[in-house]
Each structure stands twice: as C-alpha cells, then as structure tokens.
Image (cartoon, rainbow, N blue to C red; front, side, top):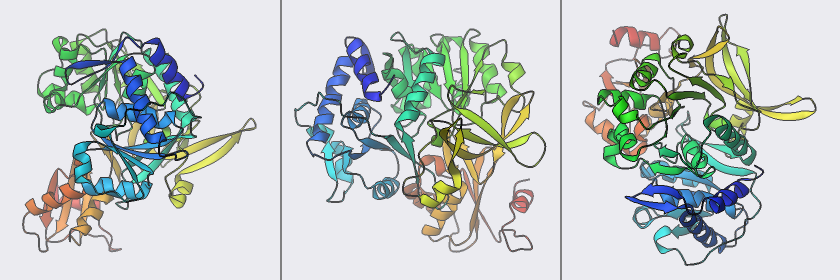
Length: 485
C-alpha cells in the first residue's frame, strides 16, 4: 500500500460491481462511488487551484465520503465539518482553516454566507464532468478540528503516511473483507469515523451510515436491521443499548467484531456484550486525534476479558510501526503516555506555540520520528496499561474531546462573568456565581448556539459564591465537597 489514491483505485476497480454504501433504502456500488468521486474531483479541479484546501460541510452520506476521496484525487486535503454543529462553531473553523473550496448541499448553502474568496461547490448543482487522473497525494490527508482550551478549536494536521500506517493495522487486525457490513455511527467531524470510512472502502466492505434519528436512539436496532458484521463506536453506546435492553443475542447475532475507541471501556460493558454473544471479538483501542485515530489494540474474548479489566479495560499494545513511551508522573507505576511514530500528526493548524509544547522529534538509528505528549495518565499493572486521568481539564464525553475551560469561555461570551465547570460522576456540571441570571433556561439556550452537543453541560448550578483557596484560585475540591455530596 503505497498511496491512498492507489488503494482506492485498486479497490474500486476490483469491487466495482459490489455494494459500497446502503443509504436511503438503496445500495450504491463501488462503480457508483467511483463515478461520484470522479465527478466531484472534476468540479474541484476546474478551479485550477494547486493542492486545494477543502472544507466538507455535509451530512453523513455518500457525497461526504466521495468528497473526501475527490480531494485526495486532485492532490488536496480537507477538513470535515458536521452539519449538526452550531453555525457559529463551523464558521469559526472555516475562518481559521481558510479553505479554497467549500463543498455543501442546497440546504446548507442557504444557511451559510461564505467569504467571496472561497469557491462554493453545491453537490446538488455539480457539472457533469469527470476527472479520471490521480494527482500526487499531498503530505497532508486531512485536518480535523477538536476542542481547544481557549474556546478556539484546534486543527490537527494528519499526515498521509499516518493514514497509510493505520490502514495497514485495519487490514492486519480487523481483517475487513468484501463480505463485511460496517457501521458508520460517529459524525464525519469526529476522527473515529476515519476507521469506518477508510477501513470499509479500502477493503471492499459495505458501509451503513447510522444517520436517522431512530437508529441513533436505538443503535442495536440498526445492527439487527442491516445484519452488520462490524460495529465501531465509543463504549458509552453500549450503555445506551443496555438502557433499551437491546444488548442481546437477537440484536448482536450478526456481529463478528466490535471496535471501541474514544473513551474508557469498562468491565460492565464487556460483560453485557459477552453475555449476549460469547463468540464475538472486541477490540479496545486507544489514541488521540493527534495520532491518527488509535495506536494501540487489545483483543478481548469471553475467556480473557475479566483478567484484563482491572481499573477498566486495558489499552493494549502499540500497533506496528508505532511506539509508546512512559514519562513518570507522580506516584510509582503512574505515567504520562508519549506516542512516537508515523501516525503522529504534523502539529496544530497555524498554532506554532501549541505545536512546540505538545509535539517534537527524536532520532533513533539515524531515523527521525515525530512524538506527541498526550497528557493521558495511565497506571501500569501486570505489564498492562490502564487509563487513570488527564493532566489538564480535558475530558471525554460520548467519545468527544471536551475542554472544560472551553465551556467557561463560552459562558463569558454570553455575559457570565464567573463560572467553573467540572466533570463529576460522568456528568459535566457548571457552577455560576449568582448575577443577572436567575434561571438556567436562558443560559442553556445561548450555549446551544455556541457549543456542539457534546460540550453542553448536563447541569448548571447557580450559587452565591464559588469557593476559592488562599491564593484566590477557584477550589474545585471545595466545590465538590460543598455542593456535590
């Protein structure tokens, strides 16, 4: 596997008569997907922009997937945005990314006003032209924007070589074939979707976007309905299935593999899966966006899962060509993870200072490797690594990275002078010192315009005074002891 273009070309050609996507109650073949990719590529190429930067602002559908491959085909790179994100957030990212081209649909084009410098491609108005060449792949494959501590999203620059290495792992460990039916549950703006999209279309499987409201609420229903063989999501989706009593053999019967990433996997989640189906495999993977989705994998079976879930499910061993080093942090056996290898990002988009803080380069055997300081603290028990906590105030909710300080920053924008957000018992709780806001209804309304759903607090508490220590700093321990007994 030398380039992404060669992977897609060879696979599309090999499987042209097979089904690639099931959407809107119909199948699209690999031939259909290739034709749509070629058409979008031609509509990008006609603007004669060398190495175009493209924003993909579309729903979770065939046009979004084809647009990704089209960008790569013309030697460009892209940033995927969710159409469900607040308009303010997407505009913020577009302004920061400064794309040459935005790909949208009819509905989105009516709701957004783009800078005159940006070329807008409406998928409902594509010219009937086709691009059959494959230009040299860019060093960058895509840029995904994640939560930033200052309220400004950080763009993670994912390299071409990183995605290639990740696909090699998918081929080796997941063993995806043209007989597989894969879920596509995460938003395209969430890097976990890379596993679904690239893992499926690189090996001839059929992709099933989980994009209607009913299937989002009852994901196990989609597994049953579509007879999926591979499910990929954050672990908390299993809790959602458990609430509706759908973690059973009836619903999971078709699955051969479940892959988790994005948040901590717990024993009760594994227990419910193996109770429903003993002969299923579960992959627990770990990795931040800055390391191309994931860099470790632990394979769980009915016979071994109990021995590998102590604090939580162990993170597994590094995948081929990737390395993990541990930097001691505090007590014995507690360390920060540092990731080394080709999947490490090239840095943060136009963030030189932040890039220097978190990224670096080392030399080994006359070769230079990139590294990333994750801020993830782990405990080592019996040679296995278990997630312990974050160095900073960053947490994960439903697999999405959330900087708690970003919520406080957004509150300042809407007139809240003093606030402090904590993560307590799997809930995001924001405390506000009593001012002009007497109820929380108006605050929630305004936050919904500024933040994505994953960042909205579960609770907002208005209190007289936020506790502080002798240095005048907000005391989070006192907040918990005073207000969250």
